[in-house]
Image (tube, rainbow, N blue to C red; front, top):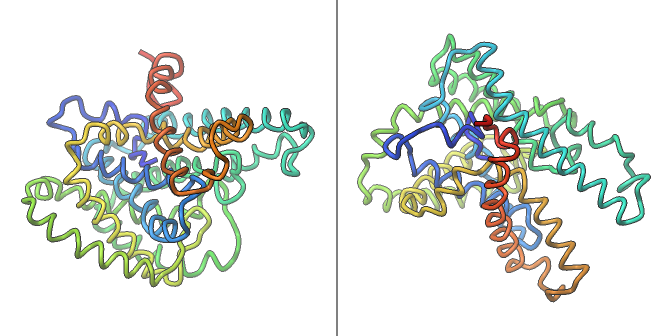
Length: 356
């Protein structure tokens, strides 16, 4: 769900010059987080979730593998794991605690301080450890951060001895078998470990594809123009055949193979769109701040909706419509501009940054 790249909050320091930055990748990350936010907003049609969910989480992992291999790869060891913990786990816990505070406040304001939705005050911390499915209900989108942390650690450990291409091929067999077998057990593993095979495969694919980054950047516009409708048509057909996907809840549609194909086609299609939008500065900004948007957008949704319902400043009939969802997402993303300015100075660790 952030692309957070492999180094997540470190995205602002990955490249110090424009020449080192791959704006197409940043814009692809921006498109991915917008898709995620819209999927979490009340009002989007079921068809939207069917198509967007068919590839947006794998897209995040592919982009994470691409950026990590190209800009942030380092020797596996305690220092590397510590840095990943700083850029992924500290933001994970930080945003969880903010969401937990809002959850408690809501219970108090609603007169249900002894329990909220039937849960005691300590119950959300169980979700913090499990980090998946319905257990992380105070802020479900955060599951992506521990999932990315675990998958990245495993990837870097394996990468010490294996190439990205070998990892991609080997993990393809694992993810195909895993998505066919494990969901049927109706079990969940702690700390998003049950998503590991899926995440590892797409990270490895992204890392392998990054080898061709210069060739991709050199492709003429006509290639992207021709490729886009072909990819879009193929992706749409495969996604429709496969049905609803929800990686967080281990739902992969009717076929594991179709899930993998739709994910890769959707990723390629997004890169086509990003090619033509890479000059849009506001999308670049969104792409460089996916971690912040990931950790705050659903909280902004809750606060804004609560204010609207309590004050009546907007006709309630608009709530739950596509217009409402689009406006809510735009507001949540815009709200990240002042939030980032405050957090960079007051709590940079929430964004995976070091205090200057």
